[in-house]
Every structure is written in C-alpha cells, then in structure tokens.
Image (cartoon, rainbow, N blue to C red; front, side, top):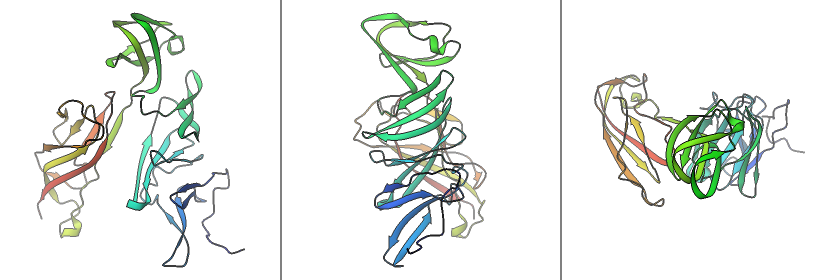
Length: 298
C-alpha cells in the first residue's frame, strides 16, 4: 500500500467524498478544509489542494456533502444548522462559496433522481424538502382550486407565524396567520405560501496595492456594470443607498443584459464594499458578473 496523502479525514464522523469532474473532494481532518484529491502529471503524484483557503469562516463543522451535477453546486450542511453552497467549475478554475440560512436548521441532504432533497428541522417539525427552480419562496407550499376563491384552508401548522403569500403569481406580501383559514384581498386559483428568500451579495473590497497605491488608497467608483440573466428585479446599493434598477420588464431566460449605474463619492479601499445587493422580492435573480470602473488617488 502506497501512502498518497497525509491530510486525513474527520474522526468524529464519516463524510463521504464527492466526485467532481474526475477529482475527489473530501473534508480534511481539521474539518475546516475542503481538499481536491487528484493525480497531477507535472508532479507525477497525487495532490490534495485546499479549495477552502479563503473560506475558513464558512467551512465550520460539516456534517456531510453532496454534489448537484445539474447546478454544479456542492452542498455542505453544517452542525449549526446552516448550509454551505460551493459552485464548482474545474475547467474554468471556479470555486465560489456562499452560505444559506433558513428559518430552522439543515439536518441532512441527499441527491435523488437528479434532485436535491433536504431534511430541515422547523418549528412545525422535521420536513423533507426538495430544491426546485420553480419555487420562488423558501419552504413553499402551493394550494390550488378549480374555481377562484379568496378564502383558503390548511394553515393551522403556521398559526401565530408570518408567511409570504403569492396569489396567481402576484405577490401579496407577508401576512399574520392566526388560524386554519386565511382570507386574501383577491380571488385566485393558486396560492403559494412560504418564507421570503432574502439574498445578500457584496463585492470584495478593491485592492490597488499591486499598482503602486496603498492598500486602502482613496478611490471613486465611476461606473458599476452588472450582467444578469433571467432576472425579475434587482436592488443595488452603489454608495447612496439601495434603489431598484430598471431592467425593462421580464425577458427571455436564455438572453443576458447589461445594466450600468453611476456612483458618486470617494471611499477607502478596505472599509466598505464597492457595491451591495440585498432584496427579498420573490422572483428570479441571475447575477452573472459585476465590473467596477474606478479612479484611484495614488
């Protein structure tokens, strides 16, 4: 037997490795690193590079992991009830980390027939939930009726809680549920009820040190350009507060478009992100890239 790596794996639990494009991903013995195990021709040996070097704050006490081939996302639930999502494309050298939180805690997950199933502990008990691109709310349940109606039953499990309601594709906002029946303002054939999905995206602080300037040199963002795919709404803070951007209405899911925003004011490189996106409007958001054009005071 030939020893290939000295990294090891966690001793307190067994976490099955995941195969991603010919590489084997496994959690190291510390539980804070995600290793990519593969044979390299240049070294003529097996290597186990850590792809979580800059994501130690996210890689905390993982429980297990599963790779979604369709979305190209590695899902890693944590012991604190949160879940890491790592978008991986080895051909483009991409490993993008994000953190998911829900009203409850992620307990386990598995891939089944091409879909991701999650075991989530909520106030109402354990729920088996399936990740779906058609769902625009978290923990979504859909009710239908052959005839339009404004009174809907079956809400006793959420009594005393607030839920976001969408009737026939129209967002009605959050309502307080105080019993089994809910009355809405308009009659509808379909009612979607769930938790609003709040997403927050921030750009990394700009570092101008490589160009001869101080790492925290004052800079002024001139233009922030965003490329989006199928997106229903977009709220951006370019330094003057959040405001909704005009996307020109819904468009084809296969078509991309560019949106540019002018920014004002001087900032310091490492104090604040150059831009932020935070919103909970139901609907699609497909952010492909962000480019910042800035002037630097060297």
